[in-house]
Length: 168
Image 1: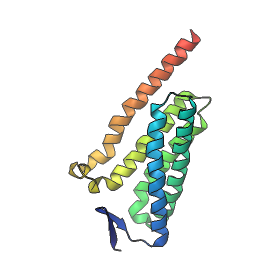
Image 2 (image 1 turned 45 degrees about the vertical axis):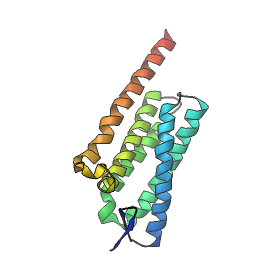
Image 3 (image 1 turned 135 degrees about the vertical axis):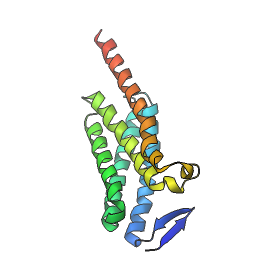
Image 4 (image 1 turned 60 degrees about the vertical axis):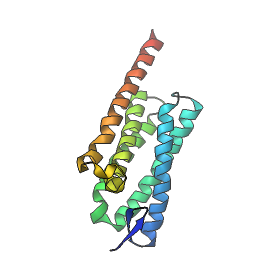
């Protein structure tokens, strides 16, 4: 199977269904990256946080559906990405479903799904990205967690403090 080169990134020429799914996947992935970052940066519970969080979650639904289509077409090459995506989607769904009644689970689930989303992106695309192409392969797997997990821990600590001060 030949690759198509788009902006220096090899894209598998796996047929029109794969390419259409990939185009939607990229757009939804960008929605997730932007929506997730903005949700994380806005005041929790605010209308902006809710709007960006919904954009992230529903964008991730589309990412996961398109990932499933592309993985079915190229299972041998994409099985590990499908595994990352399944864990990420499960974490995100858990976080989304717990947004009202279990804030710690919400923070952990949504944060973990964002870290895993970025991990999947870098594992798949890192070798073709400027600067990232100079890093060892293990960096694609580890750097999103090294950056994201302390931020998730910080959010959990802040939430715990808010809960403690509200009860006092």
